[in-house]
Image (cartoon, rainbow over the protein chains, first blue to last red):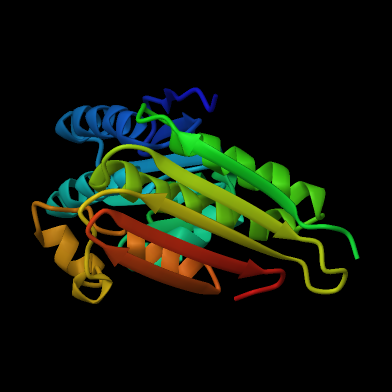
Length: 118
Length: 141
C-alpha cells in the first residue's frame, strides 16, 4: 500500500534530483530529510523533488520537508518541486510553500530553469 | 434518486491506518462519479483528520463516509470520531509558514488543511469524544 521509495537520480549536475514514489508520511519524510541533509552537507544546494509517483502526502511528512527547506534557506540554496498532483499542489498553496520554494510542472522545465540559474 | 453510498470502518491504531479511511473515501467517491481531483483533496483532508484522531485520541477511531449521488450536485460527507480528552478548536492557532520555518516545531498543519480542503467542517468536542464532520461538494473551492 503506497510503498515509499526514494532515488537520487542526478548526482552530477548542478541540480540534485530526488525521485520520490509513494506516501510521504513520517517515515517517507524522514528518508527524504536524511538524504537531503547528506546532499546539502556535500555542497549540493539546489534540490529538486520530483513527485510524479506520489499521490498522497500528510502534514507530518510535510513538516519534515520544512526541515529540509529551513536547512536549504540557511545555505542560500533552492528547494524545488515538480510534477505535483493537483491535490498536493493545492496543499502546498494552502501552506504558502510557493513563497519559499520553486514549483515546476515537469522535470525538464525545472532542470532547464534551475540549471541556468533563472 | 439513488441511495447514498455508506462506508463505516473502525481504524486500528497502527501505522498507516489513515490510508484505510482514504481508500474508503476513494471507493465511495468513485461510486457516485465524484470528480477525481476533488476526491483527492477529500482524501488528504480525511487522512489529516484521522491522524489527529489517532494521535490525540484514545481507543478506537471510527470513520463514516457517505457519498450522496445527487445527479447535478453529488457531495461527500465524512465523520471521524475519537474518544480522547477532547479539545477546543478555537484555541488551535492557525499555522504560518514563516513562523514554522523559524520554530523547532514544524507540525500543526492538520486542522488547517482539513478546513481549507473541505467546504464545511464542524467539530464537536468534549472529554471522551471528538467528532470532526466534513463535507465536500462537487466543484467546491
